[in-house]
Amino acid sequence: VDSEHINIAMCVSSCAPAFTAMYMEALADAGVKYGLKRDCAYRLAAKMIEGVGALYMDTRIHPGVMKDAVCSPGGTTIRGVSKLESCGFRGDVISAVDAIQQK
Image (tube, rainbow, N blue to C red; front, side, top):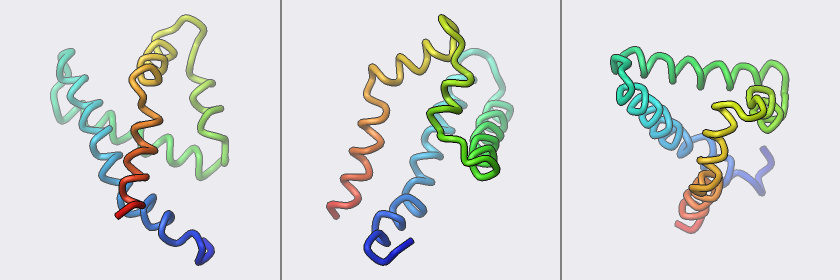
């Protein structure tokens, strides 16, 4: 990372783990809501996050391409993606980073 971008790089590498932990917790809560034991739900969420990160590091496939690859037309995943989009998921993540940068 060049010196001009050190602040944003620090944000992504040091603050985003909290965001990811919140996402992991929310996924686990949803799993528990539908009957999974909490430990199982946390392990599934953690392995998924680990797997997506490893896939990117190994292949450098764009995250949007990864998302599209698992979204079947009319399927459950695209329905969930659509809901996240309508609730402002991306904008909320960007707004959180904006708040950190404006410290």
